Length: 177
Image 1 (cartoon, rainbow, N blue to C red):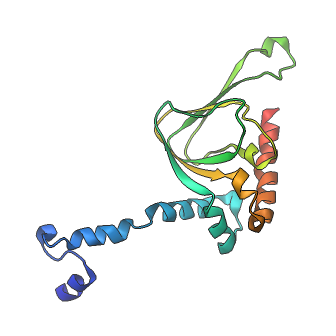
Image 2 (image 1 turned 60 degrees about the horizontal axis):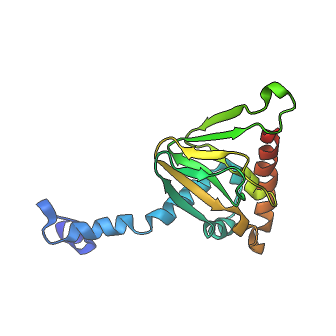
Image 3 (image 1 turned 180 degrees about the vertical axis):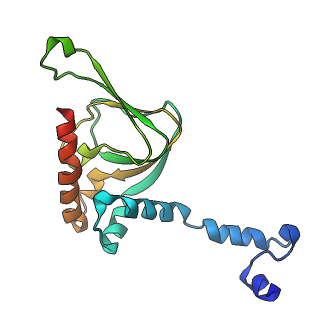
C-alpha cells in the first residue's frame, strides 16, 4: 500500500520531507477557480435547465470576484454590464427614490441588504440600462460575476441570454417601481 501511495505522489511518512505532500496539494488546488465557478453556475436555479455546452460557453464570461469590506461594487448611474450572485458576505443597495410621486417620498433613501445566495444586477440582461442604486460590500464578499453584456454578444448563448432577460431583467424592472 505504501508503494502505491508513493507512486501516486501521496505523502507516506510524517512531514513528507520528500515533497510528495506538496504535489498532492498542487493537484487538489489545480483549476480551483474554474471548478468553483462551474459549481456555482450549476447551483443557480435561474439557469436550470442548462446544457453542458451552454455552461461551458457561459463560463467564458463568468468569474469569481473578491470585494473588500465597505468597497463600492457599482455606483448609481453607471452602465449596467454585469450581474452578481453573492457567494459569501453581504451587500447593501442604497438609492434615492427619484421617481416618487408623493412629495413626502422625494429624497427618501431606500436601503436593502442582500445576503449569501442573493442575486443583483438583473438589469444587465436588458439593453442600455443604468444602475439605479449604489452597491457596497458590508462584509468581505466573494461574488460570482457574469459579464452579461459580453455574453449577449455570443451567438451561441442567444437563447440562454433571452431567457435570463425575461427571468432576471423583468423582475429587476418591476423592483424599480
